[in-house]
Image 1: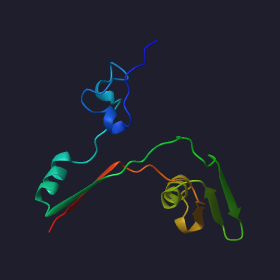
Image 2 (image 1 turned 135 degrees about the vertical axis):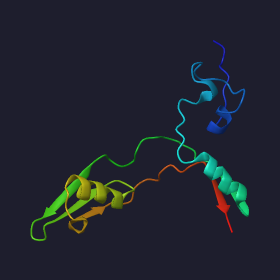
Image 3 (image 1 turned 30 degrees about the horizontal axis):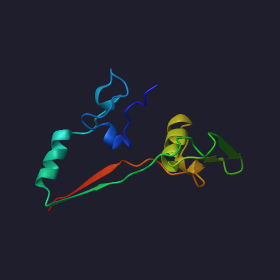
Image 4 (image 1 turned 45 degrees about the horizontal axis):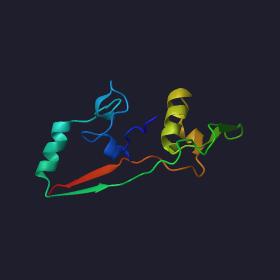
Length: 132
């Protein structure tokens, strides 16, 4: 069996002429979901006094979570207060969703504790526009 052509890294995999993984997904892109106003963003960068760009390589060794997908919620009847301990990076948003939207309780009646958790994935490129 002959080895198949390969590339290293996502940036190389999406370049013109890169070996294709699936013939029905040209450019090795399964889906692309743009957000925001592309024309307004490009106009802001075009008018910027200075633009800084940086590319960051974020290698993925494994895509499994180190934390369990578990939560512990304790109710303190004396204070009428909930304390939720969960592996997450979004304690404030979780409190808003679970306390405010789901349970419909005042947010001060709920505390969300997120102990140390693993890192999140960051975008691979940043552009910063400095407008006067």
